[in-house]
Image (cartoon, rainbow, N blue to C red; front, side):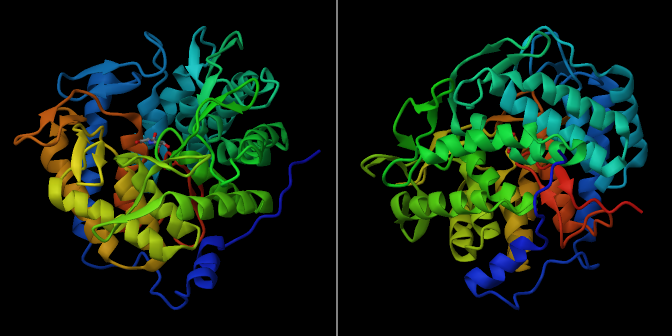
Length: 464
Ligand code: DMJ
């Protein structure tokens, strides 16, 4: 039976206008303006970093930008060209077509998933399946879709071996053997947009149904307060703890409820998103010194357990805006901007009760820029471009090294302490977010698009 769900267009803007009374707010646009110079700079940096990767580590999962070597991400000794797959749509949006061709050629000639090793299902999906699908969406190269189907079929035992439908964390790509039944909200619930896109492209709804079932099981087992703890046991589909957080390891679970609705028009997902986010706002939000934060709380009692806030939670500002709550989205981004004002590069985690640093590194994180993009798209307010520009400049000042951009081990010292790694998401996320905000991305449909949690473009490529 062909896969068919009602599609809804222009959802975010309609929801924003209806929900938050911002109808008439200036729309984000790609008109020529003073931002072009910084957009050109982003493109130059991307091209330069790509060339280093090609020269020093082509085909390895990640470049080590200080030493100039390469490293594996999923399995030791088994690189799958992660950086290439993650970078494809970013390069394409920037019209770096020679680089796109170089990447696609590598994939066509080298990439195989017949690998006898356990792969983390969540990371494989958001990075590789998503990267292949966005590469296919942008270039139309059929091999990218074939590989996405092949890889997702190899991931499916994580879902089908679990009696509850909540996926195991790891699956051996060759044998289908599953492992790590202990899982968490992000790793069990971040599939619906990639799997749903695949269902649409193939007509096979098994993918969509598997992804939705895991969301349904966990939603149905929310606490009486409407909160969902983050730790779960896959085969039984039951909680392993009672702590609720909007940060990791729960974060993208909430994104994909909204995104699944936005992309496929599935009304269940909208209800689930609205139910859970209204409970989060009621039970987890807290204002300290005029700043909005989200505590970790006990899902049964509502008791606040921790005021530690991961930098990754910054995505929630953009998600709130996408879901129509512009006011709280703005306020939460203001909070993170205060951290950027105080520390420069954002530390991995702070204690918001006194704004102290809890974890000192920064793994080239994209969430602040991600939220800035979503808020800019929703409001048209240049404030968010300025914040993203500062984010970009800080990154350039601290993370740029001989062969690219590196993670930081300590952002609180002067100079910062650097590591030697460039995560795949750097290619897929902030470079793209900067480009879309600062540039006139002719290949991006600013009115109707979808970017996944990993920044993969699954809708909205404008192919001439
Ligand atoms: C990315 O891989 C994705 O955004 C994921 O959802 C969580 N965060 C990392 C980058 O920090």
